[in-house]
Image (cartoon, rainbow, N blue to C red; front, side):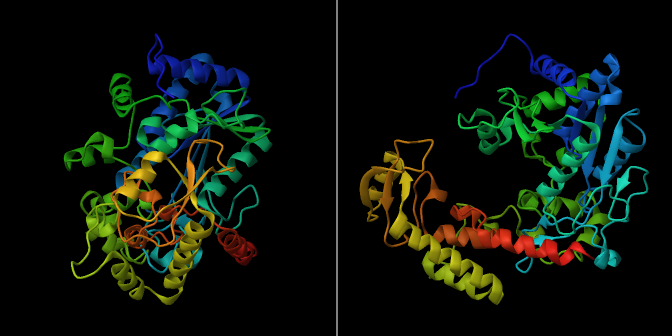
Length: 436
């Protein structure tokens, strides 16, 4: 689906969207991350609410991951304690399970874990708006996944205050995945057919009011309206980063690997504590953003094939972690041998031109709701490497190496989704921590 241009600015379109939502919903709840996008959403929404006497309908929440740039902590502190008067505010400091791609031993880490209070990166914020284990107004289980914890909070909020529109500051130009959220023709759980919405439950809906903004639009708004923003971006700019590369994310998350090294320069006091908080942080600092951290352009020692290199990498891992990868590799090989995969004609021809033995079925996949013209193919032997355009969608030993070096224990890079075993593991973790 191509872009459709309107005779209005993205700012004007956003004002129209927000005005509509204020009139449709009992509450407007801004999901604030401390980053540039959610910061602009918060500022625009507040200005509109203040102008129209809607402040009593507006609220904000922030999920604090304990380890942030000092400038992020300062910005969040200003937002809660100095700015945006007259609205409901919630500063969540809860022991959730946050993704960790720094450690070979831990898939997740738990910020604000009382059992590790002596090595917390920072002290619990001193603010009247903080919600933690001791004063959480709804049932919370230690170890709840971050995304689920945010959803649980939003559901609690709407159950307390009524029909709620949760505003999320994501933009389509940041990733194809985000673009797909808005443009997919398969989505049905929306609010009254609005493409920039998603139903959570009957009282709770998520909306993406700045989905069509660019990075330039964000900074133009900050400059034009004199909005306060996270000064970590200034430090990133001075360090030589392009505006499109700047990202405020959990430092131990895969999204933050490439910029983890910036913590040491931009927030040294925070960095010194992060090194002792999660295993593998300093390794990711050294190699994050380099070919050592994977992706398609990684290299290997010349005397190894990619299969041999994968076997070497597996031999260096802890036994439990190694077993996870081996199981995924075997499942991938079985899948391509027995079930096959639906791929485009161009993809298939690229493999055949490389000499890969492809078994064609001449049929399309019955489970495909999109790309229904793609043919199901079978591959009996995992190839060592490939130069196909859609590298991630081809079963190769190089792709296995990428997954290992990304610390991707769930092998999402290899096309796997979270399994029943993963969900069961989460369930057991929640039960374990339920009564602590």
